[in-house]
Length: 64
Image (cartoon, rainbow, N blue to C red; front, side):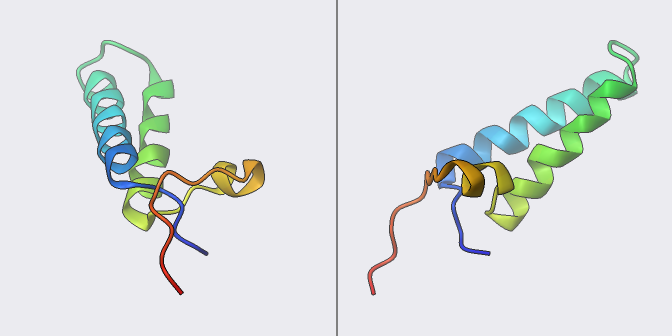
């Protein structure tokens, strides 16, 4: 797994995931809010499988 999630992308994923989970816990949205676990997991791993399939990278290229 090659890192493909940049710093800004990582922060946004964490925020979106936390907001979705908070809305679920507060009863504002249904169980679909638990999907917020996915952006949190991809942010913590610095890797997104959808980005790999699409050939997208939001992180800087590491010099060889």
